[in-house]
Amino acid sequence: MRLCRPAPWAPALLAAALAAPAPAAERPARPRTPEWAVWVRDLVLGDPMKGGSSPLWASKTDHGWPALASRHGIGPAGTIPRGKFRGPGELFDRIDRDGDGVLVAGDFDWSDQSRWVQQQALTGSLFGRLDRDRDGVLSAEEWQAVFDRTAEGKKGLTPDGLKKVLYPPPGRPSVSRPSRIGLLLGLFAGELGSLCEGPDPGDNAPGFALRTPDGKREYRLRDYRGHKPVVLIFGNFT
Image (cartoon, rainbow, N blue to C red; front, top):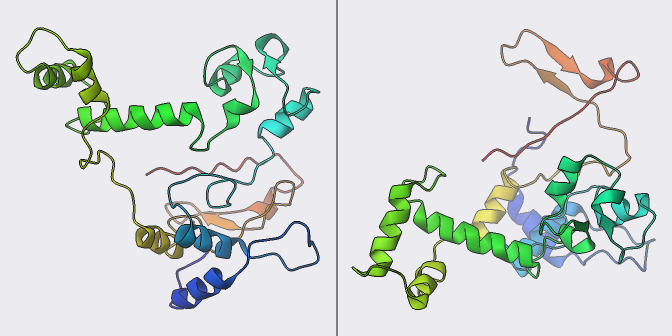
């Protein structure tokens, strides 16, 4: 469901965003810069593919490390071992990215400086080059084809050969990065975020109505409010 449609005044929004200053926490009385303006500013003036605290990459949630540490009675620099985790073991395993059996703030770090993020980037780049048929699975034949190309007729791989597999020569990017203009067009088209700012954690969900695919029935949030719990699940399937 798209709540906002792209408007023809997108260039004017861009000009206003570039001139908008960043929100200043030390001056709470000053009107806060609209979220969409911060998004545009970060896309134009920052690194479009670099994560961080910008609302473009950081979702509004109270389920990060500070909240989890607080619920376990520890400070931001503390640790949560498996035996003291107040939750199911399956969830602990998913959060514990490095598999060391202890949760720390680094397990929630999605910046480019995170070793886990760097490993994921290397893995994704390698997988994209090896998966020739783009079916999301590396077959034995694809692995063998990589070995044959890299070994160059030899019986095994040398360290230099393995390095070529992991780190291809420069000038041949394995993963295409979207351009700034492409990201901006996606933002104004409602495909990358939305120009309408959503509620903060703890706020009441805005009223809305959704019609079933066959068009025979309409569900309204207010019909369920106060009568039964409602779970809203939003996914990004691209």
